[in-house]
Length: 251
Image (cartoon, rainbow, N blue to C red):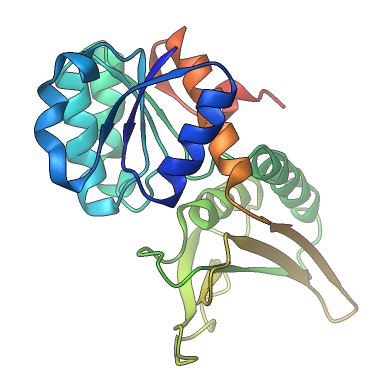
């Protein structure tokens, strides 16, 4: 495949390595300093663009790629709450193609399936209360993480006693803690910790007076995310519409 990269930070460079190792060609790399290259012949020649940037620019990046007739795989988080409905409409009504996920890791896809199944079981046991904590590197701009929000939505779909997730505590890189996990009985608190260079840890805890049940996904590096993004691009090249990890991995 011919792949364009939008965003050339740590993730972009990891994706480039894996894409090349799988026999793909990188035809265009767009970063902060060369946004005019969206209009280039090289960018237009891409089968798929893989976009990992910041919440503030992800939406515009997708629109630019669509304008050039290029399908997009996006792993940017923190922007879909505002623009998700429009993205779905563009894909369903105007023939655009976006594969979006808050997390491309195969391990997280498996963890997400386990999370939903566990919530379904715990629906029968109201004496357990549920909470979540996510930990990421200090450079991450959004909190809670997009993955945490996706996991929380998976719990809400299957646990009748919880109706919405709320922000719990935020532990800043300097150790300062703001917020609280005190919330209404029908709310699920999601806390965030920002420290060091942690690629991503997500922990979900069900707690009763008798015991605790805890599941955790702990990413060791960015390789799993980058491989998943390339697998998503390979899938997207042959499909259209508003796509996600449920299309790629049908557990």
